[in-house]
Length: 316
Image (cartoon, rainbow, N blue to C red; front, side, top):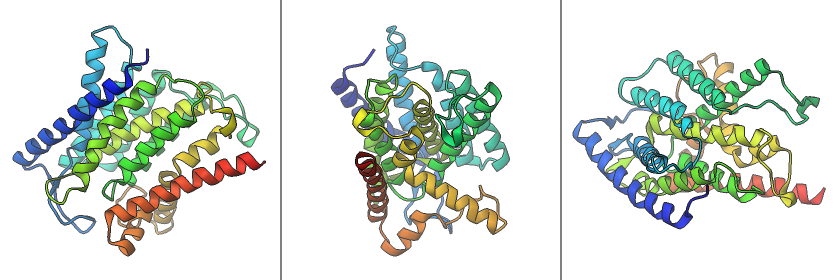
């Protein structure tokens, strides 16, 4: 069932703004602040409460409609999303071991698979079509974990992860030929994220997604990616490209950034998961000295890639 879009968008906007404000206050009173260190790109005290605030709204809206017997989306997907949120929250507060964090991400990915999210067809990539069950599960786990970490990796500049995820969801809906089972989730997530831009860009009392938020919305993005790469997503005929190319185009920056940084760290004999300030957005920020400018440049590049791929597609 597709919900009343204007109603749910307004409800989520108001509820999200309220949730972000109150959660930020609670975190500050408990002294759960993001401490400034050598990797920080900010100079003001902030909290990592944004992800929890958004999750509260998504979970609350889901509960309201669930008890009315209305299916907004597959509610069981909240289980692995909750796991990712809790893992991220623990990491925000206590610093979770990287290996343990990785294991929990794999567990979450397996739960996603058990809920029907599975890439079992490569649609001709390398001449491969249908995959056996074991290969399909291994590939799906790899892609989910990679996507979750790619979103986590780009959450180093104000508004960047929020902008990329919002752009991704908008492009998913724009290019879709039909109303998908994820359309309601798109309304809820997009509307819940928008107020966070204001709190993220504030000079005082800033609010970050935190690992809890980046892992949570990374999990959401992975749901969309697996759905696209499955046989269920249909791209509008005039924009139809190979699904893998489509995913790469609308998620260009996170994919390029994680590939580059992982290979760079491996070459330098460092752990791929140890954070540093060598991401592309850090390099751009070192030149612009502006979070807004850096975010706008990267979003523009991502949009340009989408435009170029679609232009080439129309010409051939």
